[in-house]
Image (tube, rainbow over all chains, first blue to last red):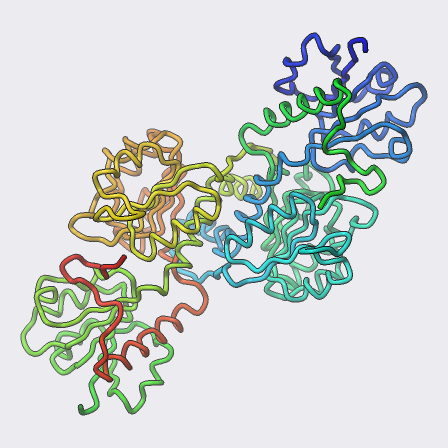
Length: 315
Length: 315
Protein backbone atom coordinates (compact mmCIF):
# COMPACT_ATOMS: atom_id res chain seq x y z
CA UNK A 1 0.00 0.00 0.00
CA UNK A 2 1.27 3.47 -0.83
CA UNK A 3 1.51 5.96 1.98
CA UNK A 4 -2.07 6.76 3.00
CA UNK A 5 -3.34 10.28 3.33
CA UNK A 6 -4.53 11.14 6.82
CA UNK A 7 -6.74 14.20 6.87
CA UNK A 8 -7.06 15.82 10.28
CA UNK A 9 -9.98 18.10 11.05
CA UNK A 10 -8.56 20.11 13.87
CA UNK A 11 -8.87 23.36 15.72
CA UNK A 12 -5.65 22.82 17.67
CA UNK A 13 -2.76 20.37 17.35
CA UNK A 14 -3.26 16.80 18.51
CA UNK A 15 -0.24 15.40 20.33
CA UNK A 16 1.41 12.13 19.34
CA UNK A 17 0.67 12.29 15.61
CA UNK A 18 4.39 12.83 15.03
CA UNK A 19 4.76 9.10 15.58
CA UNK A 20 3.09 8.55 12.23
CA UNK A 21 5.77 10.50 10.35
CA UNK A 22 6.67 8.61 7.17
CA UNK A 23 3.74 6.25 7.59
CA UNK A 24 1.03 8.68 6.64
CA UNK A 25 0.83 11.84 4.61
CA UNK A 26 -0.73 14.08 7.27
CA UNK A 27 -2.84 16.98 6.06
CA UNK A 28 -4.75 19.40 8.21
CA UNK A 29 -8.02 21.03 7.36
CA UNK A 30 -10.61 23.27 8.91
CA UNK A 31 -14.34 23.01 8.41
CA UNK A 32 -14.41 25.34 5.38
CA UNK A 33 -11.99 23.20 3.31
CA UNK A 34 -13.21 19.82 4.48
CA UNK A 35 -15.63 19.17 1.57
CA UNK A 36 -13.01 19.70 -1.11
CA UNK A 37 -10.36 17.63 0.65
CA UNK A 38 -12.47 14.64 1.65
CA UNK A 39 -12.14 12.88 -1.75
CA UNK A 40 -8.36 12.77 -1.42
CA UNK A 41 -8.20 11.31 2.11
CA UNK A 42 -7.83 7.67 3.04
CA UNK A 43 -8.44 8.35 6.70
CA UNK A 44 -10.23 11.23 8.41
CA UNK A 45 -9.35 12.05 11.99
CA UNK A 46 -11.94 14.29 13.62
CA UNK A 47 -9.99 15.98 16.34
CA UNK A 48 -12.26 19.01 16.49
CA UNK A 49 -15.09 16.98 17.95
CA UNK A 50 -17.23 20.05 18.53
CA UNK A 51 -17.57 20.58 14.80
CA UNK A 52 -20.52 19.49 12.70
CA UNK A 53 -18.41 19.88 9.57
CA UNK A 54 -18.29 16.16 8.74
CA UNK A 55 -22.05 15.80 8.79
CA UNK A 56 -22.26 18.78 6.43
CA UNK A 57 -19.41 17.89 4.07
CA UNK A 58 -19.90 14.14 3.82
CA UNK A 59 -22.95 14.01 1.52
CA UNK A 60 -21.03 15.75 -1.35
CA UNK A 61 -19.68 13.89 -4.42
CA UNK A 62 -16.49 11.94 -4.94
CA UNK A 63 -14.61 9.23 -3.10
CA UNK A 64 -14.75 9.15 0.69
CA UNK A 65 -12.21 8.08 3.33
CA UNK A 66 -12.38 4.42 4.18
CA UNK A 67 -12.04 5.15 7.88
CA UNK A 68 -13.19 8.00 10.09
CA UNK A 69 -12.03 8.28 13.70
CA UNK A 70 -13.47 10.79 16.15
CA UNK A 71 -11.55 11.74 19.27
CA UNK A 72 -14.76 11.67 21.28
CA UNK A 73 -17.08 9.12 22.82
CA UNK A 74 -20.19 10.40 21.03
CA UNK A 75 -20.55 10.28 17.24
CA UNK A 76 -23.74 12.33 16.97
CA UNK A 77 -21.84 15.39 15.72
CA UNK A 78 -20.55 13.64 12.60
CA UNK A 79 -23.14 11.03 11.73
CA UNK A 80 -25.43 11.52 8.70
CA UNK A 81 -27.42 9.04 6.62
CA UNK A 82 -24.85 9.07 3.82
CA UNK A 83 -22.04 8.16 6.22
CA UNK A 84 -24.19 5.60 7.99
CA UNK A 85 -25.04 3.93 4.65
CA UNK A 86 -21.48 4.01 3.36
CA UNK A 87 -18.80 1.34 3.71
CA UNK A 88 -16.63 3.72 5.71
CA UNK A 89 -15.68 2.42 9.12
CA UNK A 90 -16.22 4.84 12.02
CA UNK A 91 -14.32 4.46 15.31
CA UNK A 92 -14.47 6.48 18.49
CA UNK A 93 -12.44 7.23 21.62
CA UNK A 94 -14.16 4.60 23.71
CA UNK A 95 -12.31 4.08 26.97
CA UNK A 96 -10.43 7.35 27.36
CA UNK A 97 -13.18 9.21 29.16
CA UNK A 98 -14.75 6.51 31.34
CA UNK A 99 -12.92 6.98 34.62
CA UNK A 100 -12.62 10.78 34.44
CA UNK A 101 -16.34 11.13 33.76
CA UNK A 102 -17.19 8.70 36.55
CA UNK A 103 -15.16 10.79 38.97
CA UNK A 104 -16.79 13.95 37.72
CA UNK A 105 -20.25 12.49 38.35
CA UNK A 106 -19.14 11.48 41.85
CA UNK A 107 -17.90 15.04 42.40
CA UNK A 108 -21.27 16.48 41.34
CA UNK A 109 -23.28 14.00 43.40
CA UNK A 110 -21.20 14.63 46.52
CA UNK A 111 -21.16 18.40 45.97
CA UNK A 112 -24.96 18.41 45.83
CA UNK A 113 -25.32 16.06 48.82
CA UNK A 114 -22.96 18.21 50.88
CA UNK A 115 -24.42 21.51 49.63
CA UNK A 116 -21.05 22.82 48.47
CA UNK A 117 -22.53 25.47 46.15
CA UNK A 118 -24.21 27.14 49.16
CA UNK A 119 -21.01 26.83 51.18
CA UNK A 120 -19.05 28.63 48.46
CA UNK A 121 -21.69 31.33 48.17
CA UNK A 122 -21.71 31.88 51.93
CA UNK A 123 -17.92 32.00 51.97
CA UNK A 124 -18.10 34.81 49.41
CA UNK A 125 -20.37 36.63 51.87
CA UNK A 126 -18.02 35.82 54.78
CA UNK A 127 -20.92 34.09 56.48
CA UNK A 128 -20.63 31.09 58.80
CA UNK A 129 -23.96 29.25 58.62
CA UNK A 130 -24.11 25.64 59.71
CA UNK A 131 -26.45 23.40 57.73
CA UNK A 132 -27.25 19.73 57.67
CA UNK A 133 -26.30 17.81 54.58
CA UNK A 134 -27.17 14.33 53.36
CA UNK A 135 -25.34 11.03 53.27
CA UNK A 136 -24.88 9.42 49.89
CA UNK A 137 -24.29 5.91 51.24
CA UNK A 138 -27.62 4.12 51.20
CA UNK A 139 -29.15 6.37 48.55
CA UNK A 140 -30.23 5.14 45.12
CA UNK A 141 -28.97 6.09 41.69
CA UNK A 142 -30.27 5.34 38.22
CA UNK A 143 -27.62 5.63 35.50
CA UNK A 144 -29.05 5.83 31.99
CA UNK A 145 -26.54 4.56 29.46
CA UNK A 146 -24.88 1.18 29.84
CA UNK A 147 -21.75 1.73 27.75
CA UNK A 148 -18.30 1.91 29.32
CA UNK A 149 -18.95 5.42 30.64
CA UNK A 150 -22.24 4.49 32.28
CA UNK A 151 -20.69 1.36 33.73
CA UNK A 152 -17.72 3.30 35.15
CA UNK A 153 -20.15 5.78 36.71
CA UNK A 154 -22.12 2.92 38.25
CA UNK A 155 -18.96 1.34 39.67
CA UNK A 156 -17.85 4.61 41.22
CA UNK A 157 -21.26 5.38 42.73
CA UNK A 158 -21.46 1.86 44.12
CA UNK A 159 -18.03 2.33 45.69
CA UNK A 160 -19.56 5.27 47.58
CA UNK A 161 -22.27 2.98 48.94
CA UNK A 162 -24.94 4.15 46.50
CA UNK A 163 -27.31 1.46 45.27
CA UNK A 164 -27.05 1.92 41.53
CA UNK A 165 -29.16 0.64 38.67
CA UNK A 166 -27.97 0.79 35.06
CA UNK A 167 -30.45 1.27 32.23
CA UNK A 168 -29.51 0.40 28.66
CA UNK A 169 -31.12 -0.04 25.28
CA UNK A 170 -31.71 -3.73 25.93
CA UNK A 171 -32.04 -5.60 29.20
CA UNK A 172 -29.22 -7.98 30.03
CA UNK A 173 -27.35 -9.17 33.11
CA UNK A 174 -26.78 -6.15 35.30
CA UNK A 175 -28.59 -3.81 32.94
CA UNK A 176 -32.27 -2.87 33.00
CA UNK A 177 -34.19 -2.35 29.78
CA UNK A 178 -36.01 0.86 28.82
CA UNK A 179 -39.35 -0.52 30.04
CA UNK A 180 -38.03 -0.34 33.60
CA UNK A 181 -36.78 3.22 33.32
CA UNK A 182 -39.78 5.04 34.78
CA UNK A 183 -40.02 2.70 37.75
CA UNK A 184 -36.33 3.24 38.51
CA UNK A 185 -36.57 7.01 38.03
CA UNK A 186 -39.44 7.15 40.52
CA UNK A 187 -37.27 5.80 43.32
CA UNK A 188 -33.89 7.30 42.45
CA UNK A 189 -32.16 9.93 44.55
CA UNK A 190 -29.72 10.49 41.68
CA UNK A 191 -30.49 10.22 37.98
CA UNK A 192 -27.44 10.28 35.73
CA UNK A 193 -27.72 10.64 31.95
CA UNK A 194 -24.74 9.04 30.21
CA UNK A 195 -26.35 7.71 27.06
CA UNK A 196 -25.28 8.37 23.48
CA UNK A 197 -27.44 10.80 21.53
CA UNK A 198 -29.57 8.77 19.13
CA UNK A 199 -33.09 9.02 17.78
CA UNK A 200 -34.18 6.91 20.76
CA UNK A 201 -32.55 9.08 23.40
CA UNK A 202 -33.03 12.60 22.05
CA UNK A 203 -35.20 14.56 24.46
CA UNK A 204 -35.79 11.53 26.71
CA UNK A 205 -35.52 13.68 29.83
CA UNK A 206 -38.61 15.79 29.44
CA UNK A 207 -41.37 17.19 31.64
CA UNK A 208 -43.00 13.80 32.01
CA UNK A 209 -39.81 12.12 33.19
CA UNK A 210 -38.90 14.93 35.58
CA UNK A 211 -42.43 14.61 36.91
CA UNK A 212 -41.87 10.92 37.61
CA UNK A 213 -38.82 11.68 39.77
CA UNK A 214 -38.94 12.33 43.52
CA UNK A 215 -38.99 15.93 44.76
CA UNK A 216 -35.70 15.14 46.50
CA UNK A 217 -34.10 13.73 43.34
CA UNK A 218 -31.16 15.32 41.58
CA UNK A 219 -30.36 14.96 37.90
CA UNK A 220 -26.93 14.93 36.27
CA UNK A 221 -26.23 15.04 32.52
CA UNK A 222 -22.77 14.08 31.28
CA UNK A 223 -24.00 12.52 28.02
CA UNK A 224 -25.17 14.94 25.40
CA UNK A 225 -27.14 18.13 25.89
CA UNK A 226 -29.95 17.06 23.63
CA UNK A 227 -30.83 14.12 25.84
CA UNK A 228 -32.60 16.78 27.92
CA UNK A 229 -35.45 19.11 27.06
CA UNK A 230 -33.76 22.00 28.79
CA UNK A 231 -36.86 24.15 29.12
CA UNK A 232 -38.59 21.27 30.86
CA UNK A 233 -35.67 20.84 33.24
CA UNK A 234 -35.71 24.55 34.07
CA UNK A 235 -39.41 24.35 34.79
CA UNK A 236 -38.97 21.22 36.91
CA UNK A 237 -36.38 23.04 39.00
CA UNK A 238 -38.34 26.28 39.21
CA UNK A 239 -41.43 24.36 40.36
CA UNK A 240 -39.38 22.14 42.71
CA UNK A 241 -40.44 18.93 40.99
CA UNK A 242 -36.87 17.88 41.62
CA UNK A 243 -34.31 19.25 44.07
CA UNK A 244 -31.35 19.97 41.85
CA UNK A 245 -29.47 19.25 38.66
CA UNK A 246 -26.05 19.54 37.08
CA UNK A 247 -25.46 19.82 33.36
CA UNK A 248 -21.97 19.34 31.96
CA UNK A 249 -23.35 19.17 28.43
CA UNK A 250 -25.83 21.54 26.83
CA UNK A 251 -27.88 21.36 23.67
CA UNK A 252 -25.92 24.37 22.35
CA UNK A 253 -22.30 24.73 23.36
CA UNK A 254 -20.92 27.06 24.45
CA UNK A 255 -23.99 28.12 26.40
CA UNK A 256 -24.73 31.73 25.47
CA UNK A 257 -24.31 34.36 28.21
CA UNK A 258 -27.94 35.39 27.81
CA UNK A 259 -29.31 31.87 28.36
CA UNK A 260 -31.74 31.77 31.29
CA UNK A 261 -30.26 28.38 32.26
CA UNK A 262 -27.30 30.05 33.98
CA UNK A 263 -29.65 31.39 36.64
CA UNK A 264 -32.03 28.49 37.24
CA UNK A 265 -32.10 27.70 40.97
CA UNK A 266 -30.13 24.63 42.08
CA UNK A 267 -28.82 24.05 38.57
CA UNK A 268 -25.07 23.69 38.28
CA UNK A 269 -23.63 24.28 34.81
CA UNK A 270 -20.13 23.25 33.76
CA UNK A 271 -18.48 23.65 30.35
CA UNK A 272 -18.39 20.09 28.92
CA UNK A 273 -15.28 19.22 30.87
CA UNK A 274 -16.20 16.02 32.71
CA UNK A 275 -13.90 13.77 30.72
CA UNK A 276 -11.06 16.17 30.17
CA UNK A 277 -8.43 15.50 32.77
CA UNK A 278 -4.82 16.58 32.42
CA UNK A 279 -3.23 14.45 29.68
CA UNK A 280 -6.49 13.71 27.87
CA UNK A 281 -5.25 15.06 24.52
CA UNK A 282 -2.20 12.90 24.86
CA UNK A 283 -4.32 9.84 25.55
CA UNK A 284 -6.55 10.59 22.59
CA UNK A 285 -3.52 10.98 20.34
CA UNK A 286 -1.95 7.77 21.57
CA UNK A 287 -5.23 5.93 21.10
CA UNK A 288 -5.49 7.10 17.49
CA UNK A 289 -1.89 6.15 16.72
CA UNK A 290 -2.58 2.66 18.04
CA UNK A 291 -5.72 2.34 15.93
CA UNK A 292 -3.83 3.65 12.88
CA UNK A 293 -1.17 0.99 13.32
CA UNK A 294 -3.86 -1.71 13.31
CA UNK A 295 -5.52 -0.22 10.28
CA UNK A 296 -2.28 0.15 8.32
CA UNK A 297 -1.38 -3.45 9.11
CA UNK A 298 -4.77 -4.67 7.97
CA UNK A 299 -5.73 -5.86 11.46
CA UNK A 300 -9.29 -5.43 12.72
CA UNK A 301 -10.03 -2.05 14.27
CA UNK A 302 -11.18 -1.69 17.87
CA UNK A 303 -13.91 0.78 18.89
CA UNK A 304 -15.91 0.33 15.68
CA UNK A 305 -19.17 2.25 15.92
CA UNK A 306 -22.45 0.70 14.86
CA UNK A 307 -23.36 3.58 12.57
CA UNK A 308 -27.09 2.89 12.66
CA UNK A 309 -27.22 2.75 16.45
CA UNK A 310 -24.71 5.54 16.98
CA UNK A 311 -22.37 3.86 19.43
CA UNK A 312 -19.99 0.92 19.83
CA UNK A 313 -22.08 -2.11 20.76
CA UNK A 314 -20.62 -3.88 23.75
CA UNK A 315 -21.29 -6.01 26.74
CA UNK B 1 -30.37 2.46 92.66
CA UNK B 2 -32.68 5.45 92.99
CA UNK B 3 -33.59 7.32 89.85
CA UNK B 4 -30.38 9.00 88.67
CA UNK B 5 -30.22 12.64 87.80
CA UNK B 6 -29.23 13.30 84.21
CA UNK B 7 -28.04 16.84 83.66
CA UNK B 8 -28.12 17.96 80.04
CA UNK B 9 -26.00 20.88 78.89
CA UNK B 10 -27.88 21.92 75.82
CA UNK B 11 -28.48 24.80 73.50
CA UNK B 12 -31.32 23.05 71.71
CA UNK B 13 -33.37 19.93 72.43
CA UNK B 14 -31.79 16.53 71.81
CA UNK B 15 -34.21 14.02 70.30
CA UNK B 16 -34.82 10.60 71.80
CA UNK B 17 -34.28 11.53 75.44
CA UNK B 18 -37.98 10.98 75.98
CA UNK B 19 -37.20 7.29 76.00
CA UNK B 20 -35.57 7.77 79.37
CA UNK B 21 -38.75 9.08 80.97
CA UNK B 22 -39.15 7.49 84.40
CA UNK B 23 -35.64 6.08 84.29
CA UNK B 24 -33.80 9.35 84.85
CA UNK B 25 -34.60 12.68 86.36
CA UNK B 26 -33.71 14.86 83.38
CA UNK B 27 -32.63 18.40 84.10
CA UNK B 28 -31.46 20.94 81.58
CA UNK B 29 -28.85 23.58 82.13
CA UNK B 30 -27.03 26.24 80.23
CA UNK B 31 -23.40 27.21 80.70
CA UNK B 32 -24.12 29.85 83.32
CA UNK B 33 -25.84 27.43 85.74
CA UNK B 34 -23.62 24.44 85.08
CA UNK B 35 -21.21 24.98 87.99
CA UNK B 36 -23.93 25.10 90.62
CA UNK B 37 -25.78 22.09 89.23
CA UNK B 38 -22.86 19.75 88.65
CA UNK B 39 -22.74 18.51 92.27
CA UNK B 40 -26.29 17.21 92.03
CA UNK B 41 -25.92 15.28 88.78
CA UNK B 42 -25.15 11.60 88.41
CA UNK B 43 -24.66 11.87 84.69
CA UNK B 44 -23.77 14.87 82.52
CA UNK B 45 -24.74 14.85 78.89
CA UNK B 46 -22.90 17.50 76.90
CA UNK B 47 -25.18 18.10 73.99
CA UNK B 48 -23.94 21.62 73.33
CA UNK B 49 -20.57 20.35 72.16
CA UNK B 50 -19.45 23.80 71.05
CA UNK B 51 -19.40 24.95 74.66
CA UNK B 52 -16.32 25.12 76.87
CA UNK B 53 -18.53 25.31 79.93
CA UNK B 54 -17.56 21.90 81.31
CA UNK B 55 -13.86 22.70 81.25
CA UNK B 56 -14.63 25.91 83.12
CA UNK B 57 -17.14 24.56 85.65
CA UNK B 58 -15.55 21.20 86.45
CA UNK B 59 -12.67 22.35 88.70
CA UNK B 60 -15.12 23.82 91.29
CA UNK B 61 -15.91 22.13 94.60
CA UNK B 62 -18.40 19.38 95.50
CA UNK B 63 -19.32 15.99 94.11
CA UNK B 64 -19.07 15.42 90.39
CA UNK B 65 -21.09 13.27 87.99
CA UNK B 66 -19.78 9.73 87.69
CA UNK B 67 -20.23 9.77 83.93
CA UNK B 68 -19.92 12.48 81.29
CA UNK B 69 -21.01 11.84 77.72
CA UNK B 70 -20.32 14.28 74.91
CA UNK B 71 -22.35 14.16 71.71
CA UNK B 72 -19.20 14.76 69.68
CA UNK B 73 -16.18 12.83 68.50
CA UNK B 74 -13.65 15.23 70.01
CA UNK B 75 -13.39 15.78 73.76
CA UNK B 76 -10.95 18.72 73.67
CA UNK B 77 -13.73 21.21 74.48
CA UNK B 78 -14.53 19.63 77.83
CA UNK B 79 -11.30 18.07 79.07
CA UNK B 80 -9.37 19.69 81.92
CA UNK B 81 -6.77 18.25 84.32
CA UNK B 82 -9.32 17.92 87.14
CA UNK B 83 -11.65 15.86 84.95
CA UNK B 84 -8.78 13.83 83.54
CA UNK B 85 -7.56 13.01 87.06
CA UNK B 86 -11.02 12.22 88.40
CA UNK B 87 -12.76 8.84 88.50
CA UNK B 88 -15.48 10.12 86.21
CA UNK B 89 -15.91 8.11 83.04
CA UNK B 90 -16.04 10.11 79.80
CA UNK B 91 -17.64 8.71 76.66
CA UNK B 92 -17.99 10.21 73.21
CA UNK B 93 -20.06 9.83 70.07
CA UNK B 94 -17.58 7.55 68.35
CA UNK B 95 -19.12 6.00 65.25
CA UNK B 96 -21.86 8.47 64.42
CA UNK B 97 -19.76 10.80 62.31
CA UNK B 98 -17.40 8.38 60.55
CA UNK B 99 -19.19 7.79 57.29
CA UNK B 100 -20.62 11.32 56.89
CA UNK B 101 -17.18 12.87 57.43
CA UNK B 102 -15.58 10.39 55.03
CA UNK B 103 -18.09 11.39 52.37
CA UNK B 104 -17.49 15.05 53.09
CA UNK B 105 -13.75 14.62 52.60
CA UNK B 106 -14.42 12.79 49.33
CA UNK B 107 -16.66 15.70 48.28
CA UNK B 108 -13.91 18.22 49.03
CA UNK B 109 -11.19 16.18 47.31
CA UNK B 110 -13.29 15.67 44.19
CA UNK B 111 -14.46 19.29 44.16
CA UNK B 112 -10.86 20.46 44.22
CA UNK B 113 -9.74 17.89 41.62
CA UNK B 114 -12.57 18.89 39.30
CA UNK B 115 -12.20 22.63 40.00
CA UNK B 116 -15.84 23.03 41.02
CA UNK B 117 -15.27 26.33 42.87
CA UNK B 118 -14.10 27.94 39.62
CA UNK B 119 -17.01 26.39 37.74
CA UNK B 120 -19.48 27.91 40.21
CA UNK B 121 -17.78 31.29 40.03
CA UNK B 122 -17.83 31.24 36.21
CA UNK B 123 -21.49 30.21 36.27
CA UNK B 124 -22.20 33.31 38.35
CA UNK B 125 -20.53 35.33 35.59
CA UNK B 126 -22.46 33.42 32.90
CA UNK B 127 -19.14 32.40 31.40
CA UNK B 128 -18.47 29.13 29.58
CA UNK B 129 -14.76 28.41 29.93
CA UNK B 130 -13.52 24.88 29.40
CA UNK B 131 -10.64 23.78 31.65
CA UNK B 132 -8.79 20.57 32.24
CA UNK B 133 -9.20 18.95 35.62
CA UNK B 134 -7.35 16.11 37.32
CA UNK B 135 -8.10 12.48 37.97
CA UNK B 136 -8.15 11.35 41.57
CA UNK B 137 -7.61 7.66 40.77
CA UNK B 138 -3.91 6.97 41.02
CA UNK B 139 -3.18 9.96 43.26
CA UNK B 140 -1.86 9.65 46.82
CA UNK B 141 -3.43 10.69 50.09
CA UNK B 142 -2.07 10.90 53.61
CA UNK B 143 -4.74 10.79 56.31
CA UNK B 144 -3.53 11.95 59.72
CA UNK B 145 -5.62 10.39 62.45
CA UNK B 146 -6.18 6.65 62.64
CA UNK B 147 -9.38 6.55 64.68
CA UNK B 148 -12.68 5.44 63.18
CA UNK B 149 -13.08 8.74 61.32
CA UNK B 150 -9.62 8.59 59.77
CA UNK B 151 -10.11 4.96 58.85
CA UNK B 152 -13.49 5.69 57.23
CA UNK B 153 -11.88 8.52 55.26
CA UNK B 154 -9.10 6.17 54.12
CA UNK B 155 -11.61 3.52 53.04
CA UNK B 156 -13.60 6.04 51.02
CA UNK B 157 -10.56 7.56 49.34
CA UNK B 158 -9.28 4.08 48.49
CA UNK B 159 -12.66 3.27 46.96
CA UNK B 160 -12.03 6.19 44.60
CA UNK B 161 -8.73 4.65 43.55
CA UNK B 162 -6.58 6.92 45.72
CA UNK B 163 -3.55 5.28 47.30
CA UNK B 164 -4.03 6.21 50.93
CA UNK B 165 -1.70 6.07 53.91
CA UNK B 166 -2.97 6.41 57.48
CA UNK B 167 -0.82 8.03 60.14
CA UNK B 168 -1.55 7.49 63.83
CA UNK B 169 0.02 8.08 67.20
CA UNK B 170 1.71 4.68 67.11
CA UNK B 171 2.68 2.51 64.16
CA UNK B 172 0.73 -0.70 63.78
CA UNK B 173 -0.63 -2.85 60.96
CA UNK B 174 -2.04 -0.52 58.33
CA UNK B 175 -1.06 2.59 60.28
CA UNK B 176 2.18 4.57 59.99
CA UNK B 177 3.77 6.14 63.05
CA UNK B 178 4.51 9.85 63.45
CA UNK B 179 8.14 9.35 62.39
CA UNK B 180 6.91 8.58 58.88
CA UNK B 181 4.65 11.61 58.63
CA UNK B 182 7.00 14.00 56.85
CA UNK B 183 8.02 11.42 54.28
CA UNK B 184 4.35 10.70 53.52
CA UNK B 185 3.42 14.39 53.42
CA UNK B 186 6.18 15.00 50.88
CA UNK B 187 4.60 12.65 48.35
CA UNK B 188 0.90 13.18 49.05
CA UNK B 189 -1.48 14.83 46.62
CA UNK B 190 -4.04 15.07 49.42
CA UNK B 191 -3.32 15.60 53.09
CA UNK B 192 -6.30 15.09 55.39
CA UNK B 193 -6.23 16.09 59.06
CA UNK B 194 -8.65 13.94 61.08
CA UNK B 195 -6.79 13.66 64.37
CA UNK B 196 -8.11 14.50 67.83
CA UNK B 197 -6.83 17.73 69.35
CA UNK B 198 -4.25 16.83 71.98
CA UNK B 199 -0.99 18.33 73.19
CA UNK B 200 0.74 16.21 70.55
CA UNK B 201 -1.39 17.36 67.65
CA UNK B 202 -2.01 21.02 68.44
CA UNK B 203 -0.47 23.16 65.70
CA UNK B 204 1.05 20.16 63.95
CA UNK B 205 0.23 21.60 60.54
CA UNK B 206 2.54 24.58 60.52
CA UNK B 207 4.81 26.38 58.07
CA UNK B 208 7.38 23.63 58.19
CA UNK B 209 4.88 20.90 57.36
CA UNK B 210 3.22 22.93 54.58
CA UNK B 211 6.73 23.48 53.24
CA UNK B 212 7.30 19.74 53.11
CA UNK B 213 4.22 19.20 50.94
CA UNK B 214 4.24 19.28 47.14
CA UNK B 215 3.25 22.50 45.35
CA UNK B 216 0.39 20.50 43.82
CA UNK B 217 -0.80 19.17 47.18
CA UNK B 218 -4.12 20.07 48.76
CA UNK B 219 -4.86 20.04 52.46
CA UNK B 220 -8.16 19.23 54.16
CA UNK B 221 -8.96 19.69 57.86
CA UNK B 222 -12.00 17.94 59.31
CA UNK B 223 -10.47 17.33 62.74
CA UNK B 224 -10.14 20.37 64.93
CA UNK B 225 -9.20 23.89 63.92
CA UNK B 226 -6.24 24.07 66.27
CA UNK B 227 -4.47 21.22 64.50
CA UNK B 228 -3.54 23.94 62.01
CA UNK B 229 -1.53 27.12 62.43
CA UNK B 230 -3.96 29.07 60.33
CA UNK B 231 -1.64 31.98 59.60
CA UNK B 232 0.92 29.51 58.28
CA UNK B 233 -1.69 27.88 56.05
CA UNK B 234 -2.73 31.26 54.70
CA UNK B 235 0.87 32.07 53.90
CA UNK B 236 1.45 28.66 52.31
CA UNK B 237 -1.53 29.28 50.02
CA UNK B 238 -0.62 32.89 49.27
CA UNK B 239 2.92 31.83 48.35
CA UNK B 240 1.71 28.77 46.42
CA UNK B 241 3.63 26.33 48.58
CA UNK B 242 0.56 24.16 48.20
CA UNK B 243 -2.22 24.31 45.62
CA UNK B 244 -5.31 24.45 47.79
CA UNK B 245 -6.98 23.70 51.07
CA UNK B 246 -10.36 23.18 52.67
CA UNK B 247 -11.10 23.84 56.33
CA UNK B 248 -14.32 22.56 57.85
CA UNK B 249 -13.05 23.35 61.33
CA UNK B 250 -11.43 26.57 62.51
CA UNK B 251 -9.51 27.48 65.60
CA UNK B 252 -12.29 29.93 66.49
CA UNK B 253 -15.83 29.06 65.51
CA UNK B 254 -17.82 30.67 64.12
CA UNK B 255 -15.16 32.28 61.96
CA UNK B 256 -15.55 36.05 62.32
CA UNK B 257 -16.67 37.98 59.21
CA UNK B 258 -13.53 40.10 59.38
CA UNK B 259 -11.15 37.11 59.34
CA UNK B 260 -8.75 37.29 56.40
CA UNK B 261 -9.11 33.51 56.00
CA UNK B 262 -12.39 33.93 54.10
CA UNK B 263 -10.48 35.50 51.22
CA UNK B 264 -7.33 33.38 51.01
CA UNK B 265 -6.93 32.09 47.44
CA UNK B 266 -7.87 28.44 46.87
CA UNK B 267 -9.02 28.04 50.45
CA UNK B 268 -12.51 26.61 50.88
CA UNK B 269 -14.16 27.28 54.25
CA UNK B 270 -17.21 25.41 55.52
CA UNK B 271 -18.97 25.82 58.86
CA UNK B 272 -18.04 22.67 60.82
CA UNK B 273 -20.68 20.61 59.09
CA UNK B 274 -18.82 17.59 57.73
CA UNK B 275 -20.39 15.08 60.09
CA UNK B 276 -23.82 16.57 60.32
CA UNK B 277 -26.07 14.75 57.92
CA UNK B 278 -29.85 14.75 58.17
CA UNK B 279 -30.80 12.67 61.19
CA UNK B 280 -27.52 13.21 63.04
CA UNK B 281 -29.21 14.61 66.16
CA UNK B 282 -31.46 11.61 66.18
CA UNK B 283 -28.49 9.25 65.93
CA UNK B 284 -26.67 11.07 68.71
CA UNK B 285 -29.75 10.86 70.91
CA UNK B 286 -30.24 7.17 70.19
CA UNK B 287 -26.58 6.49 70.89
CA UNK B 288 -26.78 8.21 74.25
CA UNK B 289 -29.95 6.35 75.22
CA UNK B 290 -28.21 3.07 74.43
CA UNK B 291 -25.19 4.03 76.52
CA UNK B 292 -27.47 5.14 79.35
CA UNK B 293 -29.18 1.78 79.35
CA UNK B 294 -25.81 0.04 79.70
CA UNK B 295 -24.77 2.40 82.45
CA UNK B 296 -28.02 2.04 84.40
CA UNK B 297 -27.78 -1.74 84.15
CA UNK B 298 -24.22 -1.68 85.40
CA UNK B 299 -22.84 -3.05 82.13
CA UNK B 300 -19.54 -1.75 80.77
CA UNK B 301 -19.80 1.42 78.72
CA UNK B 302 -18.71 1.58 75.09
CA UNK B 303 -16.82 4.58 73.69
CA UNK B 304 -14.86 5.24 76.88
CA UNK B 305 -12.33 7.99 76.30
CA UNK B 306 -8.77 7.68 77.52
CA UNK B 307 -8.83 10.99 79.35
CA UNK B 308 -5.06 11.46 79.28
CA UNK B 309 -4.79 10.81 75.58
CA UNK B 310 -7.99 12.60 74.68
CA UNK B 311 -9.65 9.96 72.54
CA UNK B 312 -11.04 6.43 72.60
CA UNK B 313 -8.11 4.06 72.14
CA UNK B 314 -8.88 1.51 69.49
CA UNK B 315 -7.49 -0.78 66.84
